Image (cartoon, rainbow, N blue to C red):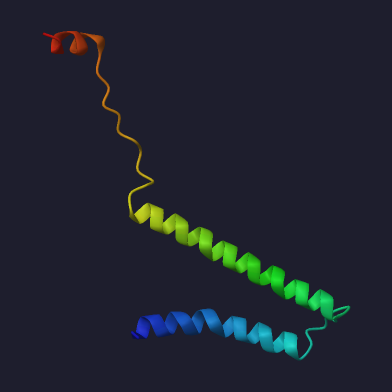
Length: 85
C-alpha cells in the first residue's frame, strides 16, 4: 500500500473513529430505545452505501466514455439522391 493511499485512509477514518468513540461514550444524545438505535444504524449505513454506489457508477461511466455527447451521421436530401444510381 502506497503512502498516499495510507494517508487518505487515515484522513477519512480518523473523523469516523472519533465520532464512533464520542457516540459510544455519550454525545449528549440518548437513544430512546434499542429499536431506534438499530434503525438509525441501518438507515445511516444504507445512505452511505447508496452514495458510494452512485458515485462509483458516475465515475465509471465517465471513464468509459458513456457521458460523451452523441455523434449523429446526418445526411442531407441532396447527398441521399446523389448516392443512388
